Image (cartoon, rainbow, N blue to C red):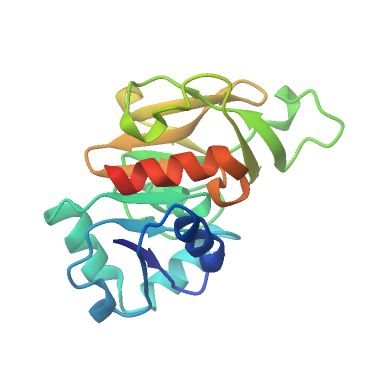
Length: 204
């Protein structure tokens, strides 16, 4: 059973549809009561960092999520801004992040990007795993995913980097620490590559 955290930010239905296709049961959590007995968590997110953090903090689920992730060690995957929220803080806003992974969210340096339209980083790009990890099983070679972001996740510990992508230099497009996973790209928009990754998460 996958529990998708619905705090008013992110395309919940897209994830539900992917899991229906691979025959994995899904539950949507809008309250802390919905999180009871959660076995795997998805934290989606789009938009501005502070807005997403405010929405989550006001949802009534924050304390329960911290307990599940930090104490009960329930596997969780943060997606796009959901990944960035797992960091300590972000250059995009003033609020603290969840501090689930020791990292800071930084803005891309436009001077290093050789594109006509430099930001946001938008469209398909390669994702290269740097860890032998079950989440990327079957995606070790030639996997591409859909991105849409202006800020990136900078891990303070290189061992937490799970995969890298090139955009004006390498950045961590996926991170992993203990039971916590973060991916900067959108698997729900990445066709069969994203379907494989989300199915792998269900099997962890």
